[in-house]
Amino acid sequence: MRRDIQQNEQAFSSKEVAEEVGIATPTVRKYGQILERNGYEFLKDGDRRIFVQSDIEALIALRDTDKPLDDTAKDLVYQQREKLEGSNETEIAIPDTYENLSHDPNQLKEALMFLVNELAATREMNVQLTNDMSQLKTKVSQLQQDHHVISSSIGNSAQRTNAKIEKLTEQQNTHYETLLQQEKQKSELLQKEIQNMRDEQKKEWSSQNDFNKRLEEAIQQRKEKWGGFFSIFRK
Image 1 (cartoon, helix red, strand yellow):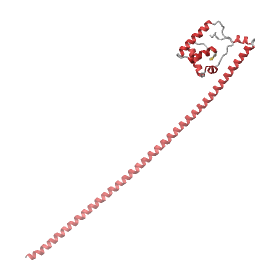
Image 2 (cartoon, rainbow, N blue to C red):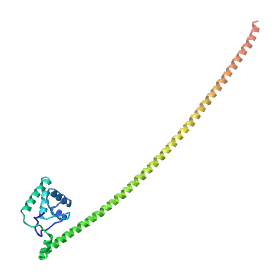
Image 3 (cartoon, rainbow, N blue to C red):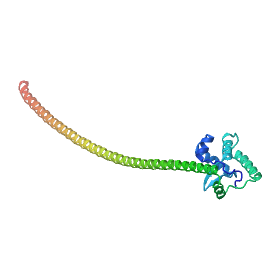
Image 4 (cartoon, rainbow, N blue to C red):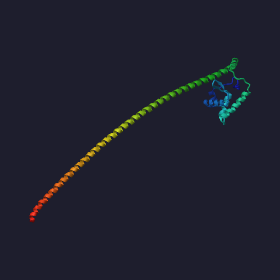
């Protein structure tokens, strides 16, 4: 238990310590955790640390050290224990303080100022927490809306893309079927033309053969006729 704190010694909140030491409030909490981890004792109100001047000096030592923070924290714990062992001061007791304050107006004034400062700091912290919670809720709501919009957009885009692909596939199939049908028709027409040409050629050959036969027969008949005629002169 802390026995090195003087009666009516000024106490500081984390925010005040941060401003005094020149570090961020989360860093104050970080340094406090490092000190406690190595055995340092803070005066506490529930789970909240209450800082006094010696604690501020310990935080400054951590801030300015060139050694690992845990090593410096162990040195500070050793110094604190030496002070506690050598101190004959009694531990601060809130009921005794109230009894003394009732007889000393200056002490009462200091206690009231301390309470006012603590209340103001608490209120400010509560306001900040409320604002942070409100901003967090707004961000969460916005993220949910964005997620919904993105999901809807992706879903709609996927549907439109699938519809376009299906339509293009259908058009392509129809086009291929049309081309195939046209090629089939062209092939059939070409085959018919070839067959007609063959038929015409056969007719032409047949007609030519008939003509050649008739021509040969006519020539043969003339030969026979002229042969009989010349045979008369030979007699």
